[in-house]
Length: 343
Image (tube, rainbow, N blue to C red; front, top):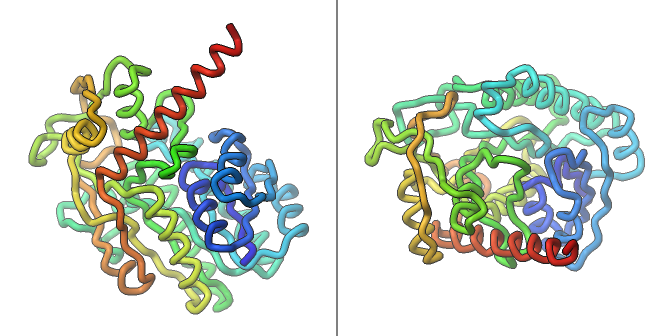
């Protein structure tokens, strides 16, 4: 298969590229690189031993996307391109709506013009919002608690509507829970710019001494230890979920949403303890107030993905922690190398 990965240089997209290339697919990456590092392309190629065709183009650039489609013959598209930080979306809602919706609409129009109707869409558990009933099933009511979640839900609605209007379309919306970890080689992982918005890179940076303290946002939630409870999933398990969704689309039309998580709830403090045990690194920490837009608990019912996609997460929380720490050490090694070259 020839596949377009829009936003394929990002965290989940790059790991999915490795999975798909290793399975024999041809991969084209289109990415603006505003939120990613162009070096990830060489990392993908080093890990897989395969070349990747790359376009530096913003998904909102209709002419640029037209060129990408005109020069290739895609069997399907995987859409990863989006801003994704919950707290930032609360502070800058218009930026999130403008970016996340303006990427999706021209993509669908371009796909339709070129007769490409298979799409795997990166959605999020944020579409569910705050719920008391756990675990979350795909038919739970959708009521996001933040603009990021609303932008994903609005995009999902676009996808439902195009599938309802034409039987040509085949769409999987994959509702990610909390991706963590890195490729087991230690050559690729999450590389956030500035202050990370997710827990694991903050945790590894605190372990390495890059940051003085890990800030825990909220110790007064109605949970077993007062900290937020989430469903953490290894990014390579998530990548395999995309491969399973592509296989599903070869034989199924219409719109379908799937949870991609482990179904195993873990609190922030429990993840920190698991990291300390897996790596032997103590984590200095401080308790802060809650962040706007966060929910107390969120974990997945994964039965639908197991039944219909033939997929389930396999890696443990220890795997997630060890792989994330291996990647952080690689980043630190590279940073020291750059410092030595400059001195």
